[in-house]
Picture 1 (cartoon, helix red, strand yellow):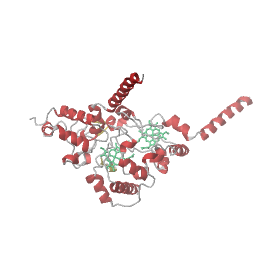
Picture 2: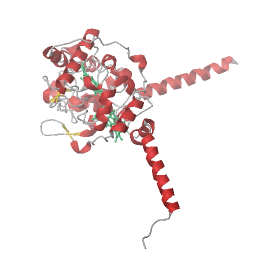
Picture 3: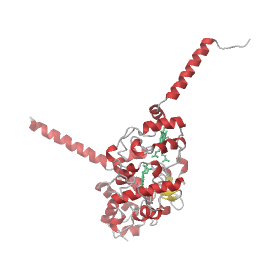
Picture 4: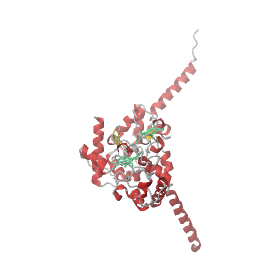
Length: 234
Length: 122
């Protein structure tokens, strides 16, 4: 005779399974953030006020994500994350002396967790609601315009010295800051204007210097960042 | 009565200001590691991770001869206001927005340790 679990047990197990499935499907972005992201990302602020806190930061601050990122980019990146900061959050913790110059110690850098399409959507929706720092961004601060790639590069390198820390294409430029050839796709233009004008207003201890850029320079540099992203998407 | 309270408030206020000032100043070697090492290198030899594509190479802070040619005032100025302020490269940023004067003076002293030199020595 076949052994079958009795009906009550099957019913109880079935109901339990059903409710688990239900909870997962309904798991909202906030729950995901708390369980899977809060360990590395600051979701409430404030930004690090001491060097120790800056060094200990495990991921970019996300408490002003809604003022900073483009939602479409975020949702896609969370499903297929790629490295943005060649030397991690705090470069000095991920480098070692090499024969010619200091080198990135790849073994110390981890891959970012990837999310399912549903989770990426749910998390993006709640992150985009986090809008600290609205005082520092002016809607419409950026006026769309164009710049030639050679003029843009000249500014970024020779005139303003940004290339020292940022790559403008894979394998060309500095490594302590985030790659900027994707910045136009990742970041809101009005945020870029605000951040480039005064990085310390967002992140007081950051090692991105305030380059005291004029309004014209700010606009031109954002034209250039947008151009780089268009080129790198091609 | 208020005459008794005043000194108390004053002392507390002064203590608070002092505590804030203390918190604001970081150690020179910690500031160096955070802001300078990206270009000047873990060993201060001008070989940071950023140097590969830089058109002007960062100063080697262990080069006693080159460093002895700079006065402490020049060093202070270039840290605070950037390379352009002393007719050097735009690639050397101004750090006056993240470092206060006391911290910059600390860094000048730290540089003198790295080069084991003083202005005009050698």
